[in-house]
Image 1 (cartoon, rainbow, N blue to C red):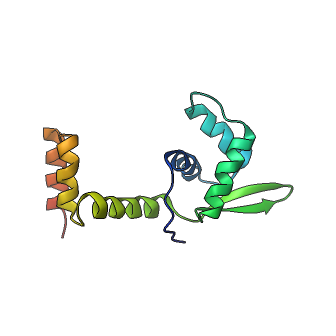
Image 2: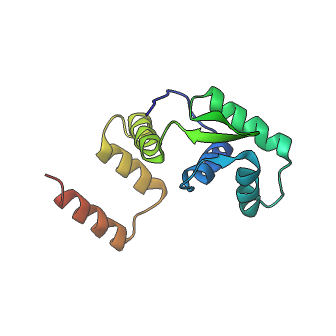
Length: 127
């Protein structure tokens, strides 16, 4: 698949999460319907079209003609996006150290005993 250096806004991430959650390519109306289930105030089709155009321009999705309609194909899988975001966050907030990132996170959002144990188990499972 593709890679991009583009960052997404929170709303663009919400749109992408809606698209990623589907096992099939979706039309704009289907994306709009699914997004409107999550939003406090429904969007108009023009708003959705604007966000989809931005995501196409940023290289996250591709608009393809299917018959008389258009569908949107994922170019950047969710896992790839998540890995890139985590690397960017770690570089920015953890001074390029995963331990630094966890320490910074813990400072503002103290980890529970269960979360610390989960991290220990995860680290112990690394090769």
